[in-house]
Length: 435
Figure (cartoon, rainbow, N blue to C red):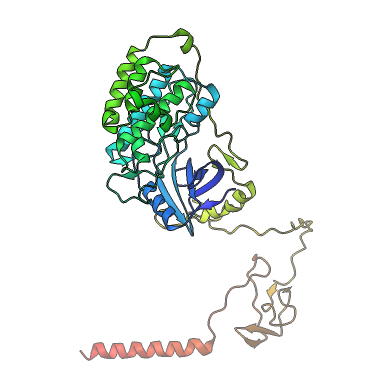
């Protein structure tokens, strides 16, 4: 089993690593599904402030992968997001090299759609690059792209966490104004989108400084393998002056849609099928599709506790008693104790009736021969704790041996009670006659 974080997220295996921390595949015990958990490695004030900014970002869009929740456990913090297992655009280029133009148009259209949602929240991403653009494992179907990693993003107008003239981002994808220390703005993100587009079409990385040199005498011709309709869009996004670019992702998306319609169908270029497959791999030992695998022994040990688990109302569900004890419509007899079965006695011949009726001896412990039937008068019979000379209680004819009729109260008790009753009767009669 993996480490349980904050009592909710069970870390399974690491699936990535960045500058701010490691990304794990984790099981969310509350939502009952696997998520990607980014665990912050450093705990200094600067890193924590960036973490707070990133986890506070909530953008619900099919082409944006933003944080969904966060948790803290002692000195560790993490935030989670959807688990996207199709790899990144960098993996895709590594597998296939340059991609077909129509396939690239689909990817760039989705990227600009997600960026439109990000800019609508007044957020500048500042780190758009192939490694931060993830793919769902859609196989040979239509690709599904998601923009991720908002670690250095910021809202326009927020205070900067870096010193003036200090550039934050990935070298090679900086817009010229970023290298000059200008405040982050939307056209800088669009400049990086154009560099990503060239990378997808050619399989080569174009450095921003290199592109700046190419624009020294105006818009250069389209690079090799870049169709002219697409270069009309990408070339304008790469203008050194941000005022000469598209101002919004929506405007760039509309121009790209028109360019895609103008692309001539190239049968040789479109024959290759691009497959986006799962890059994460199988689950580690101890984990299954429905979560961590529990040991059978621990499951059996916890089974008896289920009977005493309180219901939502606070009551307890108890197991019914075994056997017929307490069963509906049956007498409440307790289950017989387990013991060695008693052998059945061998029947004996019935003795001849005695000459004298049997007499019950005094109760057990009251005298000799207790519990045995005798055939003659006894010297003394114990009755209610006293000896009565010459008295023997004779059983009725035909009665079973050993059974006797219960005697009445002793004279010492009966006579005083009778006198008191007569006295009360006399007082009552006198009272009636006096009226």
